Length: 545
Image (tube, rainbow, N blue to C red; front, side):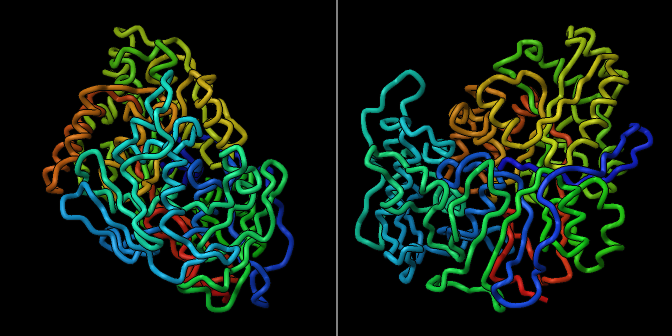
């Protein structure tokens, strides 16, 4: 999963009476600039990761950004959004059910030991085993034997490893799925599929805290010291000199700086005390292009922003007409054009336009219709007051306030926007089923497939161990996605995915609000800054100016 933390927004929505808070707390400015020697770090803003840095338990963008620097995936994606081998030499199949993965030679762990096929088998089996409670476990649900290691809540696993994973030799392993899935290779660029060294496992059979604080990877960068979550405001890394792939040309040090305020990070960027800000705040976008010139970047993005609904935890939202009324009461056009200065577009499907499968206007309940919304809401007996939670560290205050004002004006109800200081706070509250209000949620793809907008967020198997924070469950939806998974022809599979999407459009377990664009910037100290399809920086391309 790629649950997103940030938003790209701008203040000044007169129609919606939005106020901007330009100040905030977080990592401060100061320190060395990125220019100078190769040992002076390139510095990037992140929010605090939700968990320690274990790839199999990292399903949000902040931790994934760090891990993407430490590990190299089996596949990356080309300009056509197709998977291409990265750490893998080849990934082949004859029937889309049995897959053979051969690793490239030359990869070593950051402690110098060779990376082997057993390291991938170890990671995947660990992630899948129910007893380990890894947040990425559902990504392995298509592998034969998953039901033995992950039988479900209240049941005990009958095996420790999936029978569908077989190590052939040091450089080769075979993966047998429970049914054909033509897009299996496409999935393999995601964080959950990184390998795990033997040293990560302690005597009790569990991943150690020491590994979570300082994972040993096989990627471009290695951590210089353990990361103490909740205490450290920086993560310091150095280029791994034995990495077999391309390396940065004129620098060797990278620093992730943890901020609790996007505005503070923006101020630091303008002062050249920060080099990369990947999520510009409300106060920045209207002036950033004029201020930064070619250091301002505005590009297509495959992410979607939602208002999430806690269906399994709050019966007030059971009636689908309540959810439809809320959706129709949101003025997406004004929010995207005025609040966001045109750097987002109104969402009208659960699938983003950047990915095949999107259908323009598919979400009829996403059309703004305040009169019908109020009539529907009153007839359905919607709640008189609603809490609307969001994470304050991602620059969401303005658009959430805009939505709140829409609902107040158009439905005649009380709406209380509720900020959580950090993204991890709202995720933890949702995981624990402690928060029962509507909530801001965003989704950035794990891999380029229409299926990735469906299974991880709305699949029954994603409840508890995935990203289904609302607890939505629909048997017909699950069956249609499964049919799409098993279709040998991509076009046929897409038809099933769209049918599953139709169920979401009818039932609105979440309410799509806008489609993102990637709006980011860099300091005068660096150049050639680019985001890849997964919204991670292409570090080998970055140069000091």
